[in-house]
Image 1 (cartoon, rainbow, N blue to C red):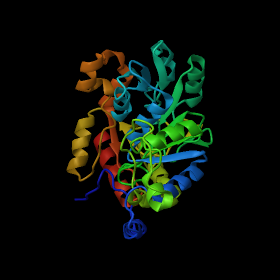
Image 2 (cartoon, rainbow, N blue to C red):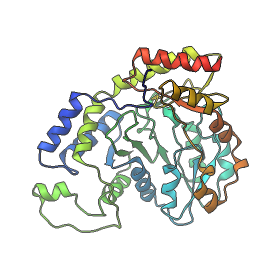
Image 3 (spheres, helix red, strand yellow):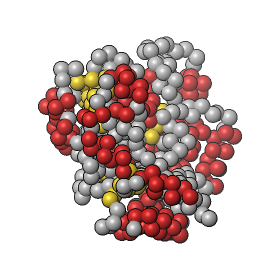
Image 4 (cartoon, helix red, strand yellow):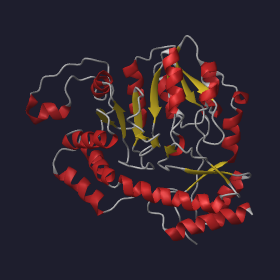
Length: 372
């Protein structure tokens, strides 16, 4: 029987060499490799500021701090997201206000956002589900009307395009990427915040390392030992080891994305007219971080795939279904009918560069046998 993992990070001798070089340099924490990766990343995206952190969660947290979120503020997010999107809001004793999603795209339903805005609303965090950008023009129009900030949760969206522009260089206040092990570019653990606002960038840079006025590489590479604590910061910096991986993977990003797109195309062609899939709108391009189908008896298919050696997963258990959030905020399950329907039927299939054509064929064959 075949054994096909749900995800496997693409690595080669290049990644091994890059990590080995970083270790042999004698400098393992945040240093020249982090700075190099930040420069290469912002050049790739086209933005003016790029700050590496140890996770997308850290990036989202510091993004909210940069825009000034405070206790009792409200931030609108889709309920259909990984819990980190909501969690970072609670760090401020602010409230995540949940919005239902579109059935076709699994992205936030922009037609529902205005009804959720109150005098306490300060920001919107759209989540680009699976790598497909949300309806950003509509979100920007709402944000402008109500003087709200926009922070993109782009954990899935590298590289993704909205109307020809790379996510990360759209007119949002801050965009946050993930480099977790399963993402389209992986540093094992890691994240990046991009912005075209120098003040937001300065705030994030300072707060990623305890609120220190000068980073450790600056101090230990000849800049002198003195420093000051200018804010109540966090320990969110990444390392040169992680950055070495990121530099190598960034050079392969277009190839890896092309392979994901080819697999998604094969799935689309095989399932068309038989199995529901997420609809990608014509004016945007997905990174294909996830490939999600919607099918009745989802759990039975999950078990069948498992029995055939195929890994699968579910994205996501909606925020309103988790005990902590239900108990703290009193979310009503009936308020999110579309997310509930999507959750009940969704299953994510393997999609990553190292999947062989034979693997993809075997997955398709197994799914279709179940469906028919």
